[in-house]
Length: 176
Length: 460
Image (cartoon, rainbow over the protein chains, first blue to last red):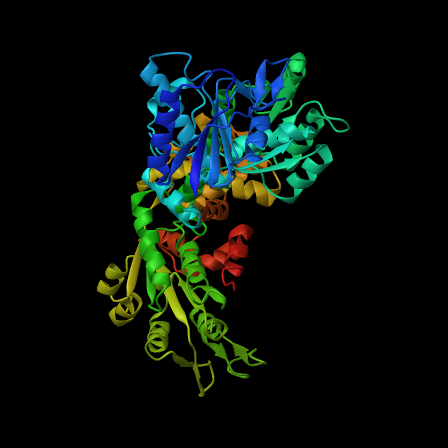
């Protein structure tokens, strides 16, 4: 069962970013990853007061639209995301679910282009990890470690640590 | 501790807040549950332990402050984090005064939340580790009722623990008041015989014939006044342990009788001919130098070797002064509880004076000092003036005012008995008279405290 990478942002997609995400996701989760090019875009997720989009709303929208051959879908967007209790989130996923979303809004806003791209890749792998039931990991450098700020994303790696990989292989056995 | 062991309860009347927060924390691997209002939260708090309670300040009915107050009573170790809107920061400060761990102003920065939860988890782990270490340290410093942190006593504890698992006879030597009987009781309590009787006999307190009857029992008509058959201490202790204190003061005849019991585990009651078989573990103790007693012929060497299977020597308190502060604390706690007096501790100066003293009467002397201080203290912290450190009686004390020979003798015997902590054998040796003579003088002069101690020295 493959993973679909879907641009759902307001602006134009950057094919270089999407392809990099696809390649890394495919390698990390050892299954086919495909770029989905559907034109449909989410609506009604903007909170007028906060000027941010509800990541919950986006996840619900994505979850209802997982393309048929895929088991997981990750939506990339350029809008800023929030959950009601927090000022912002870089991304969010359904734990043990089918959908994940990552925003490039804060990730690509600062620093070198390469560094920015790396952040997006790390967050995509991280959020997809949650959809496979992986929780935050305490192993230094593991992509599943909690990263609440840009610096924390920059210092961690883009790969699952050995124990997260083991866990991923166990939980995804029937899903490959 | 893994994250799943950290249990977080989120209380908020808004479903979207409960869901987003629990979803966020679940990804950290914590065990998260939610409650829709205050009463539901209190019910969950009462039913099971929670590490962290995250509660919204503004809720209909029971508000966050009320939940906080209840939570502090039900689960004082649960850290309570209060969530509040910006406009009610003042209320959040009030929450802090009521014992909240911290507060978060909604919406909060993800890093702020993560760091706060991590900090709480770390602090709670430290508290747990600290408690565990304190418990371990206490275990390390104790062998049942014996408290010590000296290396010499730890070696004693180690040997006693090993000996407790065996059936071998133990000989405990050491000065009066070092806790020989306490050690014997501890060994019994740690042994497979713990559920059977522990019988302590003070061999120095009784005359030869009385002790013989006490130990082995007697048949009806064995001697004048023996109107009924009586079981002795060995029979009473069957299956358990007999503690023969002051074994060095046993008469030559009884030494032979004891040797036979130790060899055959059989004896006859006084005036009887039917052998009685018993299963008894023998622990003997003495403050005498038995090697010297063997040399001067007052103690049988064959009995000594029978008794000395596992020798344990209790070091005097003056050789382990590091034990004085923990012993004082232990005794203050115990005696305070026994007497129903709340004592908060011992002043530094008092502890320094207690530590400087040499304790010829060892732990027993220290216990008496502490007991007197606990009884007489005016405040909740024991001061140096509450402890009356004894001064050895000098000649000037005895001759300071005219007195009859009897009055001087009474005073002198009382002083020597006090110095020997009621040990009649030790006092008799110092006074250079035999035990029975001293015992008679104790009765004559009405030195009741010692008298009653002697009467109760044979206890079960």
